[in-house]
Length: 452
Ligand SMILES: C=Cc1c2[nH]c(c1C)Cc1[nH]c(c(CCC(=O)O)c1C)Cc1[nH]c(c(C)c1CCC(=O)O)Cc1[nH]c(c(C)c1C=C)C2
Ligand SMILES: C[C@H]1O[C@@H](n2cnc3c(N)ncnc32)[C@H](O)[C@@H]1O
Ligand code: SF4
Image (cartoon, rainbow, N blue to C red; front, side):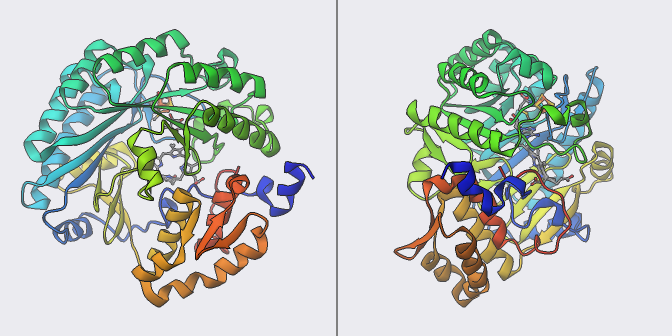
């Protein structure tokens, strides 16, 4: 039986499921949360633990049609400059809410396009962070970089500000695909930015690529992946294109008839995975690859990989605080999210409040489900004994889900020495299997992206 025939009965090719960068996923956050709840959860944080900060820059000079991230196009610098002032004010509000000068071990700037900031603005923002927080000398500071919106002066400013890791958007190097997704970016320009980042002392360089793009073929993605490999990135994220025009309106520019179907997507992702593994990369979680010496690959081998809103991380901080419009927080009590619309976000901060407008308090049952889904999507196996150590008999709450998953996916899912394991050829099923443990999905009406 060929692979497609074997996987067909699982429903994989017709399923839509979340990516589980959190459990519950963001659409389940409630608006019963605001600055007061955020303040209370911040006050309850244990004092000595270092924090992680995520800063969102929701602006781009170009708006790629395929993109589902929260961002808006800008033609002139004013909105960005105004936003930066609000972001700096929000940093001050956060430091005040924390009460004491707190240690920060991780900073991530994402977007949108953080490199839309000028060198002066970059220095201004890193300076504001350093004035308000005690940034550890070995702190990891990663920045999402658009190669078409960066130059040497910006890279120097970021390096001066402490950037240690860079993540650059590639998606696909094929000019025909780039035309179909409204995103032109030559290999030469990308390679030049990679050289500049390396020269600036970046210890870890990530690249993002996407399968399932309009008109993408096996030969096309093979050549594009070869080009990515020639840049020798330390890490690669291989995302499945999520066509969700009801969320990201700009995706209406993409003709759905040109999108590879689910069976074709499976072939695209599996061919590309093989290419990375043959080139010496270690597969991590559902969609990442890393050089074996990279810290994330090491974390994965040691069972320390974590899933968060940026995908995968080796960050073990207890508190991830989101700054900027739409940013998501994860605190011991649960999740919070800042106002998604930039104007609403700015209004809250200008009125002197933290910009949180949504959130979710985790119950013990949620925590069991979240822990299972996180370990499963990080390790492709879950040691039930470890969950029992943490949650005691509450683990029994997911016993029916385990049995249902074994019934439905028994060809790929099996017990081995107390671990529920997914066999390597069952990897495309990982999100679908995780969704068996999602109590919000049963009977729910949310529309998600394709499972493969
Ligand atoms: C890798 C970067 C991406 C981020 N979001 C998406 C991508 C590709 C796409 C995406 N996000 C959501 C969906 C729909 C549900 C699903 O398929 O899982 C898709 C296709 C859900 C979602 N993720 C976030 C939020 C707030 C939502 C709800 C949708 C909504 O509010 O309308 C959080 C989030 N994810 C990303 C960012 C930048 C972000 C918010 C800060 C990255
Ligand atoms: C931050 C990263 O998110 C990925 N990204 C952005 N939009 C989408 C989408 N619709 N589907 C899949 N991946 C996407 C890109 O690879 C980008 O670089
Ligand atoms: S892919 Fe990057 S540059 Fe393109 S619209 Fe999305 S955030 Fe902006």
